[in-house]
Image (cartoon, rainbow, N blue to C red; front, side):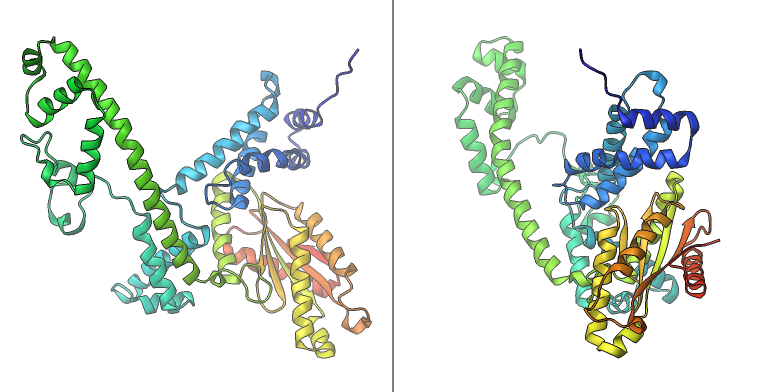
Length: 441
């Protein structure tokens, strides 16, 4: 006789549906992260970072937890799977393109757009490449390379005037004749003519004759039927079958040509990618995200939290004692200690969190979908730094420890500047009270 084992996740979700306890909700979300990561891995070939997919999937999971009704008799994992997959697919649809650009290049282009708009209002004219580069603190060559890649990703619409034709009131689609009275195969490129002739040779004689008479001799189906001694319906059937075969033959060759073209364009993108250095978003010393990129991500995360009514924690982490450590053991050892601290932060953080270097001695952590529970993670970080032996022989005067100040949206602030200010004030309070972790008030 088999014993029915209660699903722990089902127990938790029923408890949350009954109590609406935020702590229970967080336990459900944490328990469902394996499901989110599993679904996100299905889309790992979409050129979007898996971390971003996991983050979007987590939002879908949170929405599923909030909206799930156990009384309907549906398993929560089934319901959550659809919600997670839908959130990821919606994210990919928003960012989808024929040829996908790398995430860092997309971010750089967004920054260029924002800067161009701001400078245009300031100067009253279109800013130069050099002015944009100076404002973004990157080289003019990087800006030019990023702008050049945009044509690679752009796909024109038949309803949009292009090039010199933009001044005309007719779109390309409107300029296309519905059916040319006298098709001229000589106007086609040689390669296309050869492809069409080869595809036509693969048809049966009667099908080839129907195609020639209909498209090249401009005969109606009734006239073709009278000439060949068939009924008009049979001629229509022959024409449909011939066109289907032509389409299939030509599409195979077209797909191969498009594939080669895309591969060539991707190679061109990679060439530009190597020139637009990755350090535009990474810190040279620690390899974490730099301050500029983190502030832009904070703005995006804040907008996402407003849209989905979720919490967002901002944490400032200071490595206290680093200055005395550098005086005692040298600047190189102090930099090495800072890199070790960066590794400890990365090890402690979750996959959906964002970590970067804020200034000389401080790091910035962005914790999506996290409120006061951030104190648990921050306490673990402080303990890991305190327990780490940065050197074999370390005097109490040169001991390193982590101080962490936490601010939560929307509890403590609702703007980027005020969130950072609240986190900084909490950090100052931690230093004054000799506490490791302080939550803003």
